[in-house]
Amino acid sequence: MASGIKDKVAILGMGCSRFGERWDANAEDLMVEAYAEALADAGIGTEDIEAAWMATALDEQHVGKSAVPVATALRLPYIPATRVENYCASGTESFRGAVYAVAAGACDIALAIGVEKLKDTGYGGLPQRARGTVNDLYWPNVSAPGSFAQLASAYTSKHRMDRGDLKRAMAHVSVKSHDNGARNPKAHLQRKIDMDTVLDAAIVAEPLGLFDCCGVSDGAACAIVTTPEIARSLGKRDLITVKALQLSVSNGRELQFNDWDGSFFHTTRMAARRAYEEAGVTDPRRQISMIEVHDCFSVTELVTMEDLFISEEGKAPADIMDGFYDAGGEVPCQLDGGLKCFGHPIGATGLRMLYEMYLQLQERAGERQMEREPVLGLTHNLGGFPSQNVSSVTIVGREGA
Image (cartoon, rainbow, N blue to C red; front, side):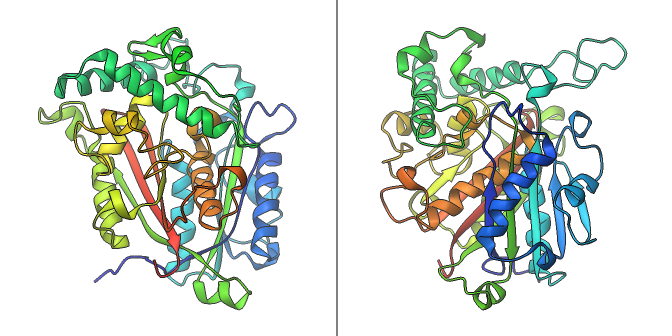
């Protein structure tokens, strides 16, 4: 019977490019930037890597449909390299490939890297195939802000919540993340904002205003993983190991049956339950030290607090307003600024989240370092729309925790 991957894989090194409007770099340059940091952090050479997984979601925008660009850019030594994509969970999907390969004994040292180069397209949001033409009606009447605005409406209806109270809770989400991101030199946006700025901003899709929506950006992030035994043989101490990595994909229930009310994500709840079981977490509200969640929209972060079973159903707004998820709160969320401040270069996002957890667990996050000593960090990705999506939950922590 499968026993899971808890403590079977250690993170040997990680790296992350600066995110933003990177007119100075192409996708290959961004991968090299992240990889160089990860390689130096790991203390190994390129010749030591035995397999690689590259994540990018919108291949037609920059690197093409194969993994050849990563092998070429990094001069990998003719090893297996695979390009993966799974909506906005693509970065975590690359990490899953590398982690599973090491846990299975297929290789000793593996690379996961994610990249996206979106600002060059000139499009304000995530590029859509054939946007503006009549030849290819691919999600022709759907927008991300519109879909997640419906999530907000369903949540307020289910919990009989005043919309003004929801807007204030969402505004606190954005203010908190921008406060954290202002201390991060790799973030795209590094400016604090206040509640009035958020609440008075232009509406994008009611009730979502401008500051409730994350932007897009260019960026890359990278992880090198191995077994704990090999990590120790290379002189590594105080290892950060993978406790769980779970993925859940919509099966049609949300769209084809009537038992889903549109106020939560089945996939996140399923992935979270499985991840907690794999990691041995029985009380996430008290055992999880910090989280990075997929805050594509402020309401998504709010709902995710409940889908991860950290806030009770209907209680996330109160927890948010009480500062439970602030940098000095019980379970800090988005200590690096999140998607709100980094933007969302799709293939890089999941690995960027893990990069922050890795730095925090090693107490290397500088002025962003959380006040208490962290033990377990959780990352969450959500791809697609509320009605059809994929969710991933990854838990990392100190070895033996």
